Length: 438
Image (cartoon, rainbow, N blue to C red; front, side):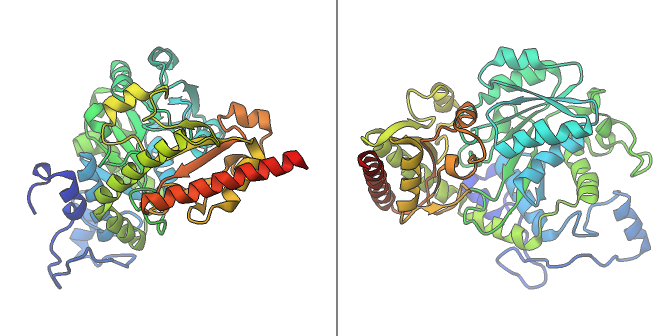
């Protein structure tokens, strides 16, 4: 194949990570449905197990199909390596577990997926890792939150569900000043839209379950390493700079150089935590990547048309999307995400809680699903589903008012999406009017 650095995103999405099948000449990446691999001899077995040579020895650590997916996402992001995992949440956890230990500290933005907040706020403290949450738009607050034991700055490029946009270049500047890696979750902004390494991020995380896979059929996550953080020059990351007893005498930063982080995440993280991406799921994600650029073009075009429709509809109380001029991070989005901020839209339907339920129940094209990034249009009313356990005031404080609808715009014909929304909005208002009369 032509050298990856000379190819454009659309081409990398089809070709990166794939070599010609030497035995059968398969055009598609084969599914290597195997647990283990036959050694050539005892010497090769020893070399593989001691990390002296590359290769596959057990599919919990690596697999040829998974490797093809890893190489493809690494090429798309411009990284030195990637690690495929069982879910995006596994990718978040394993990144933290690879770099941090008890007594360490994270600075994270508040605008995060609820699962990431729960991990950092509730679970990690049991293991001695504490997180300070700050407003991601306040660069001074991020800088002030850094402590002597801080080991990572974490944020989402576009926050879920509020759609806040992180100024990656600005936050990367703070991270570099402090000698810390910047880890960003770019799930809402896959490579056709944005490549965070170009703005100074060090590690990128994806829930490939969403837009990368794109069809709602496979769970998976990726960690991508830029290879641009000098682990060896810092004493803050002993997991990478000190000899590791698991491979006696080996220090990852010395042995693997720029790939030290991703190598440790694989050889320790997958071995010990077992968050493995199956070959079958990796195959599905590869199929998703092959059409990623085309799908994202359609996702974004449809989202912009739907945004215009919602912004001018009398039954819509408010609309939130980074393309909207009144969005807090509109200027950052225009500069950082010129290809499109995301195909997610959140909006409020007039009539509050009951109107939101009525809209969801009357949708005929859009699916009522607690997921995003599918080729099909998805919507959910968080107040009556994902955040139902919270009271109205708690939901409001969490940024989930009772009238909020979260919409993941798909790639259907945009007029059909809009027709469905128009009919659902009409029904929502009739439901509220009926309640008022009653």
